[in-house]
Amino acid sequence: MDLVPAEELDDLVQRLAVAKMALEARDEQAALDALDAALAMARRLLTDAHDNQLVRRRPAR
Image 1 (cartoon, rainbow, N blue to C red):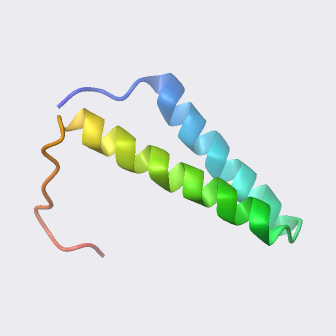
Image 2: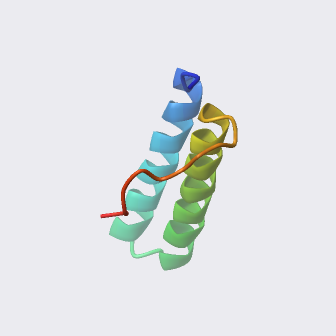
């Protein structure tokens, strides 16, 4: 398993922060856009870190 570069993790956190601020500002579309981008990035980071061999070892909580 490869380490995820700090810059990519920071980008993910920044997208989540944008979503939170948009929710606080009651800008639902901006919040949804930021959350969609964060989820896509998180999926990519996990898949890349596991060489496209991501397999769950337990059910999601």
